[in-house]
Length: 157
Image 1 (cartoon, helix red, strand yellow):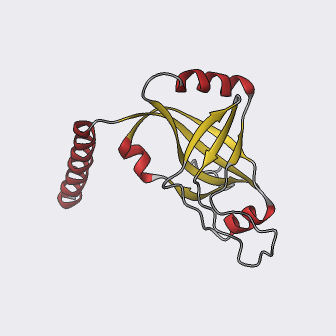
Image 2 (cartoon, rainbow, N blue to C red):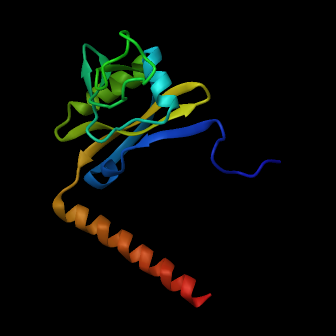
C-alpha cells in the first residue's frame, strides 16, 4: 500500500500567497482553463504568475484576467499575449452558484493555485471576502506564535 501524501500527478506551477493573507477564503473550487498551445509549452517551462490576477463573470461565463504566462521562447508570430483574458471551465450549476454569491457585497473570486493535474492545467479559485487591517494583524500574530511554539518544541527535544 502506498504512503498517503501529495498526488504524484499534481505539479504546482504558481501559488498566490498574498490571497490567503489579504482575503478570508469562504469556498474553494477547481476549474479547467482554456489555453493556447504556446501557453501550455510556456507553463511546462515552469513560468507563471498569479499575483495581480482575478476572475470575473461575463454573460454567465467565468474569465481569468491578468494572470501572466510569459511568451514561449521558441514561439513565432502565433505566440500568445502574456496577460490575455482566459476562459475558465466548470459545470453550469457551479458557475451559477458562484455567480449568485459574487453578487453579494464584498465577495470576490481570487486565484489560489495553478497546477498540472496529469497533462491538464487546472486552476484552484477561492470565493473570498476582504480582510480588515486588524484581521491581517491577527493572522500574522497567530503565524508568529505558531512558529515560536514549534521552535520551543524543537529546543526541548
